[in-house]
Amino acid sequence: MSVLPLVFTSGWASGINAYAVVLLLGLFGATGVSDDVPATLQRPEVLIVAGALFLCEAVADKIPYVDSAWDSVHTVVRPLAGAWVGALLAGQSGSLSDVAAGLLGGSTALASHTVKAGTRMAVNASPEPFSNIVLSLAEDLGVGAVVAFAMFHPVAAAVVAGVLLAGGLLILLFLISRIRRFLRRRAQRREERRLASRLP
Image: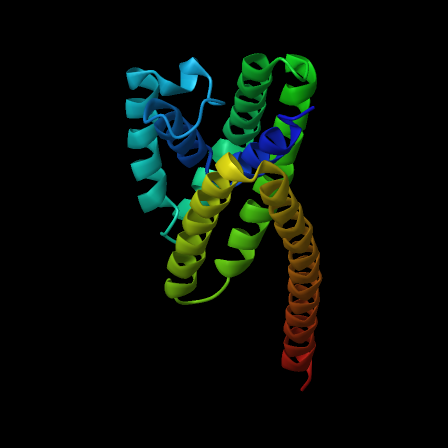
C-alpha cells in the first residue's frame, strides 16, 4: 500500500491540472529525481504533449468564462487522467492493484475538479478578471508544490491534498449557498419592481 498516498495526491492534483501532473511526474522520472515514476510518463512524446497542453491550459484558465468552458470539457479528461496516472503508479510499484488505484485516482480527481470548476463559476460572477488570474496562478503553484512534495514525502503530501480537498468542498458549499441567496434576492427585487410598475 506504499503507493496509495502518491495515487491520492496525484489524483487530487489531476482534478486541478492533469497536464501539469503528467508533465511534472514525467520530468521527475526522466531526470532521475524519483525511481517511482512509470516509464510511460517519461516518454518524450508524452512529455511534449503534456507540456503543450499545459501551456494551453495556463492561458485558457486565466480568462473569465473561457476557464469555465475549458473546465466543462475537462470534466471527463481530468478524472480519466487521474485514473490513468493512478493505475500506472500502482503497476510500477506492485503494492496496489491497478483497478483500485485507478478508482482512487479517478474519484479523487473528479472531486477536486468539481471544486475547481464550481469555484471558477462563482469567481466569474465578479466583474474583474484579476481574481481569475490570481486563482489560476495559485492552483498552478499549489499543484506543482504538492506533487513535488509528494515525491519525497508522499504521506505528508497526501495529508495536505486531503486537507485542501476538504477545505475546497466546504468553500464550494459556502459559495453555492451565497449564490443561491443572491439569485433569490435578485429575483425578488425584480418581481417587486414588476409589481410596482403596474401600480397606478
